[in-house]
Length: 255
Image (cartoon, rainbow, N blue to C red; front, side):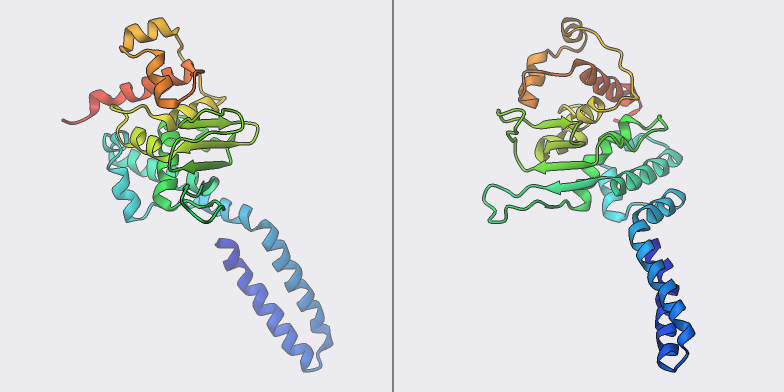
């Protein structure tokens, strides 16, 4: 959007130069050339220009997303300053990633569509919580998040499952109902969103134990996570990290 503002003087230059050429001032052809070259350059650089502007002036979420944030336990226990930090990071994170909704089984349209803003936020909130006290919060290892309205098979995993990460393709895939429950009720449902974001994060270390010790300390075994995720291979370090984060602020929650 900022690049569009920068293009206005160039458009005026081209129009004015064109008018002068029609009036016989042939030297103004140079103005037309400069304006066109400038607009073409802005077109190819617009994403970088806009991103640089957003980094300096992070947009704040609009009212519907703010209402959504108050459904998130982690956000509710933050102070006002940290809530602003959360909002700015969320907005930038949503700008930095692409979100696609796959059509439902009954849909006649086979093409994926852009996800709604609230769904983008649901996808992004686990990553913001995961990296809230880290400098690298954009998690550029992933470029796109793909969502289904149900558990799904994939070329890598033929059984129905609720989440998957593919670092080579820079994509995360989720069943939206499973994702949303974990984001809004992380003390009741497993946060599959944070689980997958944790799996692809190279800069985050985990304090890991084996499954037997984990089951003894948490009262939940590997089988429970297999049922939620739908796959037999469960990433224990990522499960530990998700558990550690959510248990880390539960004591600050108001009754």
